[in-house]
Length: 292
Image 1 (spheres, helix red, strand yellow):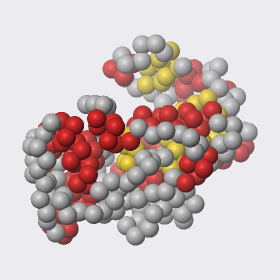
Image 2 (cartoon, one colour; image 1 turned 135 degrees about the horizontal axis):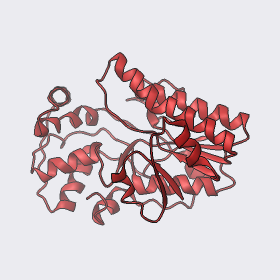
Image 3 (tube, one colour; image 1 turned 180 degrees about the vertical axis):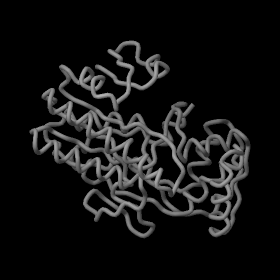
Image 4 (cartoon, one colour; image 1 turned 135 degrees about the vertical axis):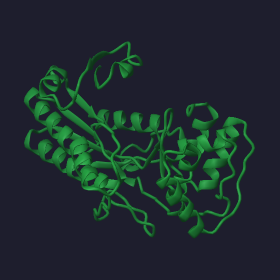
């Protein structure tokens, strides 16, 4: 396996592989990386920019669309047979009232989601033009080691023994364990019956916030500290946390705004394609220390 990473720090965890350290926006580096390769798994670079600005739109387009186009051009020239693109459920949009699937009308509401959808269209176009088998993974919130999303934020809150107002929240959230996502992607590539298609990959069950926080607290041996609060107050606290990101403890409150609104997705297409696939899931991941 050959891996293209940006920094030497990331290469340390890949001692058994052929590692190229370089920039995906450098076409010579990408050309060297794809030579002799049959299958490419593309996880676009992640970065942060100021939310809601033109800079954010340009930033996400560069990270997700431009990097994907560079890699696809070199992949086509090198005769790559399969291309797996890690996208996001945000490419299809979000809904607080409906459970969305791969065939739901696409209506991305964020610059991140719009960039992911544009990149997906590129993957499909190149796949059809160059007879390249393509797969698209659409994960919801990803959790695992080094997680900076909802489970990771709740873990840090538990480490600080924080009381959180999650007790009465009933909003369900779809999540996916990072190891399950990786295994699912490889399983699709190996399964000849898997069609060139976008697949939502999620845990078999959805979670309410109290379940997540309680599980994290138990895994850390911490007392479960929760109380009830009205949803409008939670949204306000979440906005405060998002505004004061420079203060670590206050920044943790930003997760509340996310948790108030249900975000549920359906993975029927993946389950129909690989019905025997076994998930680890949140409870087992927490119990075996995979989130440390």
